[in-house]
Image (cartoon, rainbow, N blue to C red; front, top):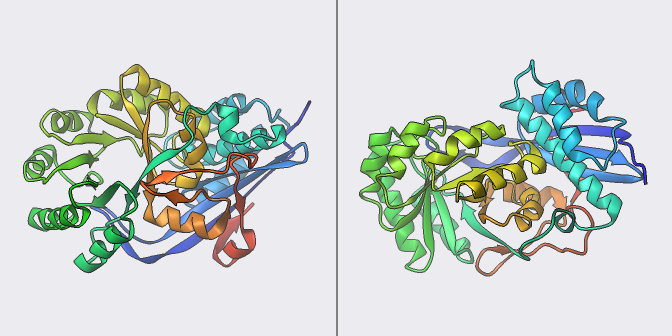
Length: 359
């Protein structure tokens, strides 16, 4: 049945964090989410990205004219035309986040038009998504870090932020986390590119059973990542700042596990392509942040390792969306596969006080 896209709406909301947050290279006190709704055939698709309001303005100016009137069934075709449309603006960065938000909304729309769960449309290979708790910001005092780790005891894995301060302080926080987690839960650390390669290698020699070392150096430093990967016991991971497929192709030979963010990489269309690229290199893929939006494509990714249950995004999504999958013992997400599309509804009224732009 024909179904042409007849409407594309976006709105940006700036949500204060529940306290100051910081990693090894950045500090922030609010997070902006750009929410997109697309309509066709009496159905509405929902997608979003964590990006500045500029992403919404770019949707209105550069993407909507190329999506309106197109068949809602041909999502990869819409993705391709959006990528061409931003050629002169530059695909990486804000443009990629805008494309991602529209792409995820179009996939949700297609599934709703068919009356099936998005994961069913994509082709599930599992019925649950393993996740790890992510938070542990560098500006949290020890008692807050300890309380957060204990509050997420249901997860078998937890990640804390390091970097941005003296190495001794990082080692102390890592040792604290290792003690709180006990022998049966995995400890991950994330430097957000704060170290040099030699510093990262030196740090890792003092790690107490750390399984995952994320962005020990900048993810743009593929040679540095490779040096660290070849020198440390922990798995080295990177990829959250991948905005196009070529970026992941360059990165694949320098990590033990690729990361991709469906709100940045080009949406579900390109997340699946990244998964295929990773599989061709013998790598697993880990979903970065935005847990509610990653669930369905994660269920359809054969080489998925896990999904990041990021403190800030999980808080926003549980507060402003209905239908968010709950976390069960072991850090597993079990979505309601009887709900059409991604199963989510944005609570516009609840978010309205935080509105900063719309179109």
